[in-house]
Image (cartoon, rainbow, N blue to C red):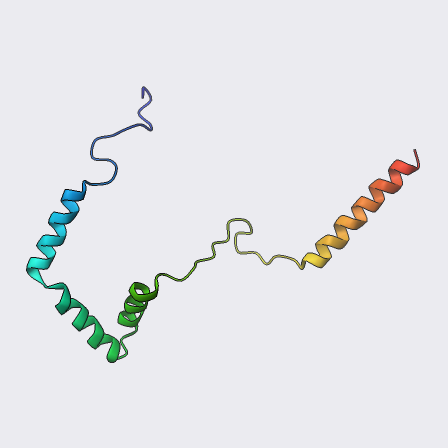
Length: 100
């Protein structure tokens, strides 16, 4: 693109699967996965909190995360109050229309 934004760029995007496989093979050459899992299990038995979190996230997956996109952390008012205000506004509008 003329303005330099967007579009394909050198070295962007996902790396080839072959690169990922090479990395895994190099890691396995240094330390066998079974050894890592045994060490992690030992840390879990020692009640290491980070090890427990890691174990649980691999075993059961990450917990569902609720992200607030609308209120920026502010408390949301009770919906009944909001409903009452909406109903009052509608009544005022209806009364105003019927008087014309």
